[in-house]
Image 1 (cartoon, rainbow, N blue to C red):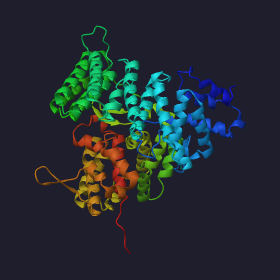
Image 2 (tube, rainbow, N blue to C red; image 1 turned 135 degrees about the vertical axis):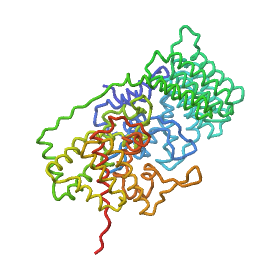
Image 3 (cartoon, rainbow, N blue to C red; image 1 turned 90 degrees about the vertical axis):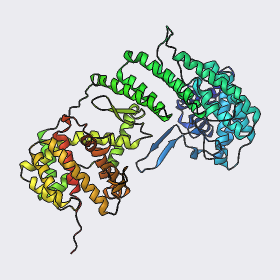
Image 4 (tube, rainbow, N blue to C red; image 1 turned 30 degrees about the vertical axis):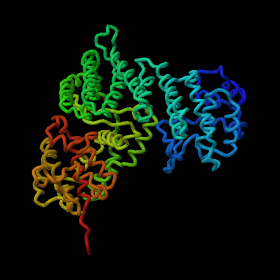
Length: 590
């Protein structure tokens, strides 16, 4: 078993290359001698190599650190924990890093120690580190790139970007020039067309992120190299050409971004036409899902760059190609076994009391909890992490992309709505059993539901007849008629709630008149969100108006519901939404 000194000696050599800071951390973490855990030298080294390097750090912000915790998690009490934590650093650890930064000779180690000192010295000791520490850090990074010390080439670009930003912040022209040159040279040495990420970084760092630091000739050369690579990737006359759409897109996005800064729509159009041509050449060799994804990227680029006719033309191609999607879809089913005894126990707990109390129980029990759903999503993200770090596309039966759900870190609401949608499906058997059992036992009926609703001030008296007819259709299992009749009444009830509470229910129309706000606009109104609170507000949006959810109102309103959508499952939920409106009563004054 290696000791602390043996591990450090192993890496601290100019001959030792092709390793990463995480390799040092891994060796340190495997030391099993518990007596070392309280040793300050071991602590200093463990902290030093367990930090991760961040990107997009603003060097002008004194609170912005290049070295960040590797793991961050939320505790049950809502507080946040992290490891390693900068809050655990001490003055003694800083002193050990200072001595190591001077003594070590391997540039990976020297860059790490000096970089940590530059980041954390003032935070821990209150004293700003010497600029010589920063210069030492920059020079070590330059040596890492020049001599190819790193195990993973892509990590070098992040280090070089850091070195350049620090050089600029120090106004050290010589070092800034060396950093620029190193970024360009390193990319030329490691780049291969098939591996985006090992090229395009010179553009990202020197042209896009740090505008104006290049000579015109230097900028033109980087763009020309990017153009040459893009031409090779899209050369349809090459006999050896195999489509590498991620690499094509990687290059195209940067060229489009560049020509947009020059207001050159002709060049943007040229780039996107070449991308489109490469997609169409290989469209029949890949799945329609993949082809549509590629086309959607191009369509959005056309649209965001003001080429609307071209964007519409690509949209037409997507629409045509989507016809192939249904045949590629596979049904995923899940079997849930529930015993008669379990169901009886459940319905008995719901069906207690007088009819009004039972309806109250059903209305309240089946409102999904936003906080409970959030906890479940976070738990699932730990169990199935891949599902929550990718962007998901939701498609309808014709292959049309109706919505996207971004990674959890960027789209918590999207994942909440998606999870609530699944919960509504799973719980549908319990909701239906509660209603059916209640009716069979004559504990609830069409009349008791009508009486319950009529006590709510949200329902216009003039509309009672419509609701009565809708309920008749529900009990006749005419789900098509029931949903068409009742959903507009629910929308009307929520609009009445907004108006009663002082909200604005009108909006400006295109013909100088006024329109009534639609259901989604009502549900997103701050007044309604406050009154309904998180659970009911998110539930109604999931059920009626959000494309990431069931979206029942919009599907019916726009005539895109399939006949199979009008089922007992969806009707039960629409009925439940009506019961939720019945929960609102006029306050009685005695």
